[in-house]
Length: 371
Ligand SMILES: NC(=O)c1ccc[n+]([C@@H]2O[C@H](COP(=O)([O-])OP(=O)(O)OC[C@H]3O[C@@H](n4cnc5c(N)ncnc54)[C@H](OP(=O)(O)O)[C@@H]3O)[C@@H](O)[C@H]2O)c1
Image (cartoon, rainbow, N blue to C red; front, side, top):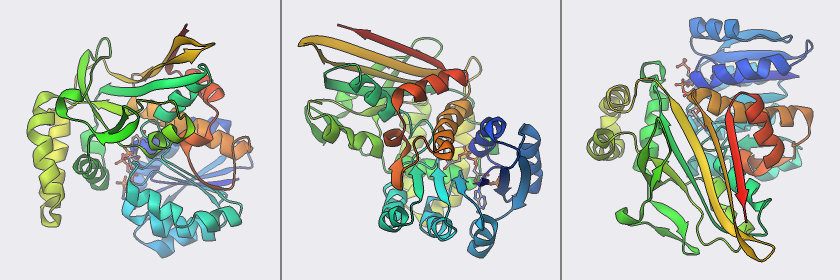
């Protein structure tokens, strides 16, 4: 297999390569690609693999260079934070007759670009997996896990919170821009009372994540994987993904300013600087670090009320990103979950083996059912 990792000089790309490497075989080739040769060399040094691990310098705005690099690839892993280029990159990957996997945030523009190619992708027998990682990527897996434990799901809210070092100085400008574009798109919509609607501020839940995170006010965040669930489980009255705030100063002072600035093209450079500064000063915490993604579900089993809870936790945000991604990638590579078409990671994977793999990668997976 020839695997090309676009964005392997970045945080998520490097960790994915590190976790993927040991499972490859000597005949495989892993090409770590990005703009910065020094960062790529550091990524290559971190990968222990029987496969041939090489680096390739490419700026993905140079589509001819991307085309040349992915020629002969079987799989292209995209951790480049350029959702605006997905239409072109996906076309190149499809024309190269390769599969696709990306971790970019779950934005309507990215998903529409991939869906526009869905028919051609399926006809070509290729498998394109999007919304990989932990958010997006994990919340709907947790709901599907609970659906396997309960006869009927009634409430299935997923909560996430983070106490971490955002490594703001290491992020590409496009990654910072992608994050504040996401804040600008926040619409506080979730599935509540059996319908999709905008929550009022006082309806947003306050959730205790335990130490060292503690209690956090959470707001709903749209994820495509969650939108699909009420259609699958018609008994659902509540089903949303809620994310905990960064800090009061970040949430109530800086984010509203960033959301305004994000809408004005000319203000993007200062907005990127402000976002980077505020991630470093107002959203980054000292150790101990913790990231938690937790589902609390209610429903029925054997005609009686029942509950199912599951959480995935870790201390390293990039392990929490890469472990789900690599679990899915392994299933694509060995064919066990590979199906032609465009898929969300969270809809494609099988929840029970997926959670077992996350635990094997060192994440703390806790499950509990009652009733
Ligand atoms: N689903 C999840 O759970 C999850 C979690 C974390 C991150 N993410 C997403 O994953 C992506 C990567 O995140 P990250 O934290 O790893 O960001 P990062 O550290 O900033 O990495 C971004 C990568 O994109 C590369 N890049 C940017 N523009 C490029 C260009 N024009 N040509 C070639 N390479 C380019 C960067 O290369 P340089 O090194 O040259 O700048 C870097 O390798 C982002 O889209 C982020 O939103 C998802």
